[in-house]
Length: 301
Image 1 (cartoon, rainbow, N blue to C red):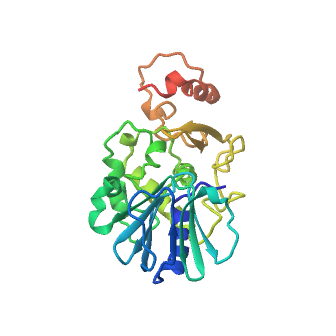
Image 2: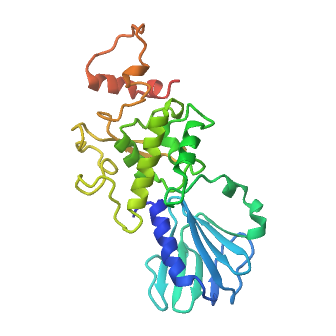
Image 3: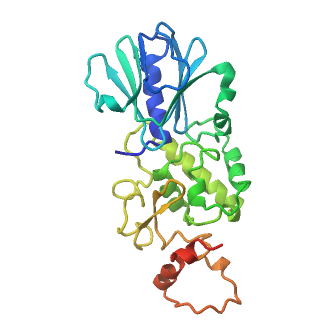
């Protein structure tokens, strides 16, 4: 099962909006809900998505906030249809005439009032949503270039929802490949040109996939994905072997090609090597990559 990303949540919000908006709610069920319970008879006014966050707003100002993270999803069923996932995974269910919207396995299911959004201070720190065409991409570029932790690795920053919303693990890998940037590049070393390429690539990929459930980020590559899920296969661009490794706080599996994604890599990019460094080094590229990937070298500095 695909991990939900910005395009997936955007499509889910569109479907829920069509089925729920303007209709009075008949029933609400959420055993683990944090916050006030939405009342039957209230009319669903809006359904909004922001990255992996999906919100349903009623006419009395009550908001249901769900965060999908890696496991959550929203399903839409006709009345009487059999659910595709077990009832024990249900986190919220909203019934209107003809439709039942069900949220499965979302780690965050909570409500708040529109006039009291300060109750969720984290919501105010979300970055711009790249799925939305009105998003100012220049603002996202600026967030990258002024990141408060310049030593943070780019492969981790791309998943930071405070910088940009919508990019999940699949798009992280594909954007880095498309821009030929190393996932180990320090965000503080990005030039303005690099940051613009990253943001434009991410926004273009996400928006191109909003209407389709099958993600295609590299149309010329069989399967549509350049590196994600292709560990051990040949890179379509340079012929090197695609590699994988866990990275970041949540240890998500990163896929990348070390043969052509070495730009700004602190260990592989020639611009970071000191002319006065007399450390013995096997000149063979495979040996250089092996030595650079040793834990005490990879995470140094």
